[in-house]
Length: 71
Image (cartoon, rainbow, N blue to C red; front, side, top):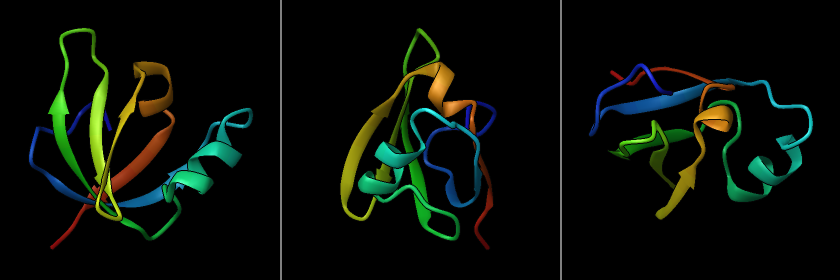
């Protein structure tokens, strides 16, 4: 997620965080789910919008979530 700009509509393709995967599923970050990058912070943290909620992700977690642009 770190390589996409703010405001970019995306679809989650793969989540690769073994220890945090369960929490991401609980938050709705699952394969095939549409998300939007709301804001990128100075420390490379990312705020995403998923299912109507904004979620802040650390750079470590954000780098483990793979996505593609929504058309």
